[in-house]
Each structure stands twice: as C-alpha cells, then as structure tokens.
Image 1 (cartoon, helix red, strand yellow):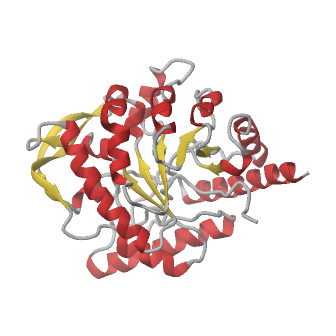
Image 2 (cartoon, protein in one colour):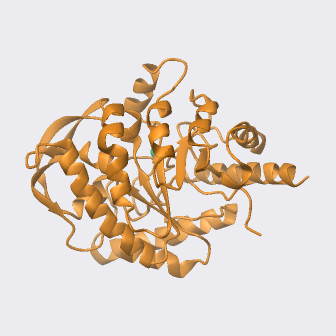
Image 3 (tube, rainbow, N blue to C red):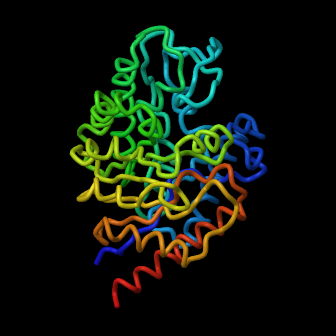
Length: 342
Ligand SMILES: [Zn+2]
C-alpha cells in the first residue's frame, strides 16, 4: 500500500557554512574549481541525509549546487549576457540589477542532470527536482532581443522541457516548476502562463508539480505582504486554470499565511502539496501545529492527494532551524496518518 501523506520540502535547504555564507541569499561560494565541485556534492549528500534522518518521504537535493533558484539555471544558457545589466522591477515588488537577453536563448548542455543522477545513486526513495518556471524566469531578466515577455517565456518553456526530459531519464520521480510570478501577473497567467508551463511538461511521463508561494522571508517580500490585506486570495486567479491543466500537483503555502484554506477547493482532483511549515520565521512549529494545518486542508483535498510540505524553500534559515522544521513536518504528518487509520 502506498504511504499516506508523503512528506517533502518545497526545495531548498540551508548550505553548510564551509560551502557558502549561511542565512544569505545569493551567497557567494567559499570554494573554487575542483574543491567547489566536490563541496557541492558533499553538501547534497548532507542535505539528503538530513531529510532521511527527519523521515521525509520524497527527497530532494536541497538545491545545494545552485546559488539561486532562477539565476543558476539561466547562467547555463546561451543568449543571456550576465555582464550587460539593467535595472528592472522583479515581481512588481523590488528593483534589481539583472542580466540582459541579447540573442536567441538556448541550452547547449544539461544544467542539473548530472546532479540528479548523483542524487539518484544515493537513494531509492522518490526524488523531486525543482526548476524555475518560464514566467518567473523572464521576470528576472531584461529582454533586449525578443522584446516580448510571452515569446521569451515560450522559448524558456522549450528549454525547460529539454532539461525536464533528461531529468526524468535520470530517474527523477517528480519535476517541480517554481512559479511565484503566478501570484503577481494574473492576466499573463491566464493568457499564456499556464500554457507555457504545459509546454514545459510536454511528453513527460513522470509526475509534475507547480510551486506557487509568497516567497522567502526577505524584506521585499514581507513589505509586499503588508500590502495584500487580511485575506490573500491570489491563488483564486491561477487555480481554476491550473485545475484544468495537465499539471499533477499544486504546491501552495498555508502555514501562518493569510491564504484562506478553502481556496484549495479550486484545485479539487489535483494532488496538493500543502505548506505546513512557515519559512519566514525561526520559530519551529510543533507537530500539533503542523497537524492542525493538514487537518484543515483535509476538508478540501482527499487524503490520498494530500502531500505535507513547507511553504517555500528553507535556504535562508539556519541549519538547526531547518532541521527542527523537517522533524516537525514529519511528526505532524504522522499524527494525521494515525487519525486517518483509526
Ligand atoms: Zn516558494
């Protein structure tokens, strides 16, 4: 019998302090060349080990080999000039100096496939691999070539599909696309965002997920959240379209968030990765708090489709806090499993 309520994280985990500056986004690497290659692999092993110790069911690489969930993927592509920078507004929220698309974008070689093969060798557990979504990718670039967000997104979707097919062949069980931009650009989501995402998963036999969240606990995000009012209904805009899409799993945030939990009803029939761990604060949830969130979610998602998870990645947290939160997630899911079997 398949295990009920399989746990996983949204993706990233903190890096060891010998590899990168702790509790920092875009933290520079502390190693170089061959040492860096080996250090990243060792960190991946540690990230896996900590998930296993905590009893996490669907494991990941903890994104140990990437500096940032979007930028690292783009760095491996042709057509983007990282020296030529322009200031743009990211997710309509904060200004950042970003690279420029100067020519047709393409992927000359696989980006994460070797890392995925490495992870596959370390475990027989199901593995999930995160990639940025097309809309979130275009939102972190200045486009001087296509001069169309939609066109560039379709090009990225094609490239992501190439990568995803190779990840699947490497033994990845679930491929997840991170689309925080889906919580911001509602018209585009409905015009072409979901369609571009479906282009990215075309022909895949493995399971696919989309992760839509309110981000890490960085200042730009917490400031933005203050403008959203007491009820966060952003999911209402993308969920109806996603419910009709070919995506298998929807990953959303629920813990300590102002998201009305009944919005999960909008994706009835899909598997739902319910964020039951808040990644924006250091306080470690109790198993009972996790269980409470899962119990509320169960009103709107069938038990065999509920996947307990974290609200977002845990990269900016300390390792101690992240470890505590992994344990709480496992223990909280176990409480609900027992209730369901009673
Ligand atoms: Zn997230």
